[in-house]
Length: 85
Image (tube, rainbow, N blue to C red; front, side):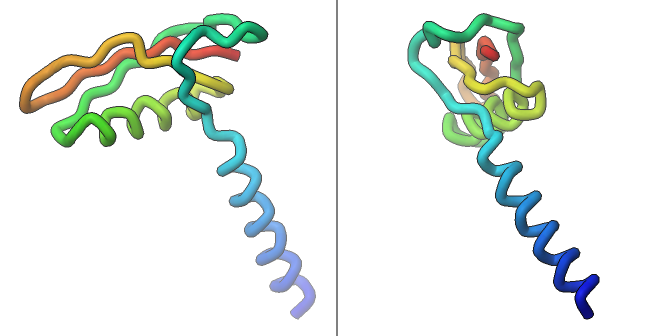
């Protein structure tokens, strides 16, 4: 029984810590960070869906923040962002 409780506690803490590691969108280049690359994503949805996909890719790449530098399209949206660490 103790093992199950400890496993659940560990899983809960791991999930909570992953959510705090998500990249933050910024509007300008952060003073204390450097550009480490660019990412791109596409979406059939709206602009917020594209933003969510770029956030997920930035987080997956280990970025602490990202800045969307371009988005275009009509029925199919494309976006590019710089990532920072």
